[in-house]
Image 1 (cartoon, one colour):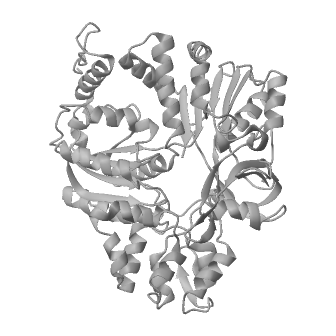
Image 2 (cartoon, rainbow, N blue to C red):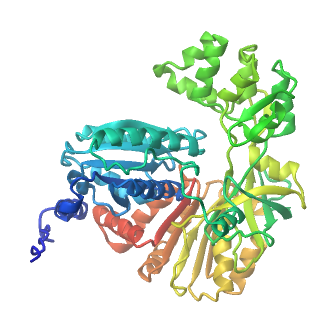
Image 3 (cartoon, rainbow, N blue to C red):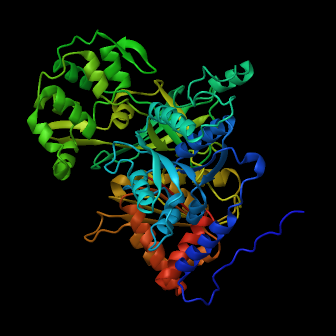
Length: 598
């Protein structure tokens, strides 16, 4: 006879707590009561909670892969996203593996913000029984590299958790760091389970050598599906400027022909383009080195290539990192560079790194690189650039388009530019082919209900997915209302897709179009200002079930938009600050508030 189910206690509505405190306490109680003791048959297996926080899907993919491999080794695995995960449940776990990415200015991904906020509340219960390891994903191009992973690690330790394996950090090229972490993880888990069954496989690995022989049909299908490591060489079908020649910036529309490929995407996804360095930049680098460029070097996943090919197609030349400066300072025995690496000099180091590249390093302390191998070891891999897709697969079959802001600037006595944006603008033309693949964005999707209204907030190139949304909704016959907030510098020079948007407004497909051109009047106006001007109507749409989408700059714009939404909830909804926060959190949980920011 089975035991009767436990009743989970809860905090009454009239208890003296605000909504956020009451939600946390209820979650804490639910977490404590949700942990079921292991069945007798699995008591000898080590239980592992694999928890992930993902913005674009990379962390989720790694977590699912890890969970599958751990299960094959007879571990009891509980896989879960930190979205909706009750932090107090950790108190009932003994071993956890975290795979988390960082978003914006060192913030948790949208899906993990509520989890981390609850973890940080005052007097959160100690996690003295928890042993864990953490794999952090980041991008060294951004200032707050892997910051959420570091913050989560520090918080878990402050609550009494024990890291049985030091935190590992990865740049956007995750394969090698993830494989190294898993290899060490496997050894530590074996130490924790000395009586593991004898049939447990010897190691967790990313390679296919130890995997069962794949089905030939599956292998063919896998090879035909473009990926980051096996992209499709897509011809450029169209390229045109979206800004006026007199504009202070350049934004272009680039369209690729994918009719002959097996590429499939959805509105809201991103396109990964594999760039190459400017041949002039490569030549300038070689001119500062004692090499001809014909020397053969070995590149991971690239095999043996000439040094020129390595610098052109495989290695990042335009950005510096702390690790690169430290490596070069040791080679050059350069005290000026070493001084910047002191902990108290972090601000000065950040200022030095901003806008400088490999050439600056070679010029400051010449003669340090004496072999091609030492140069290869110092440089990061040239990684794909992600662009929000601005086309709809339904409205634009066989095509995929991106909206690209071309990065150009003058710094430290040289003209410089973005690797991929200047490639698209200056060094390729219609008919040329570039390697690309699809980066799905499952957290940024149109509502399933085609009658639901949508509010899109996308200044600058943030308009890209909303162009896709508008074309998609028209092509599929969606009847829901569409409202777009768009902002740029000047209407005369920077009104991206102006003709399309005004035509959609004229025929009623775009129910409302609000534009903020910051430099067209003495006092600058931004999209969040227009939102406040339309606060009553916007609140009415929200009450009608509208979905809110934000795309663009995550460091400032998205935060300002979020604050504005809270203000509107307070003013138009008559809510307290706490209740407004609860309301915004609720529409996030309902997937009615989605962000694609960078």
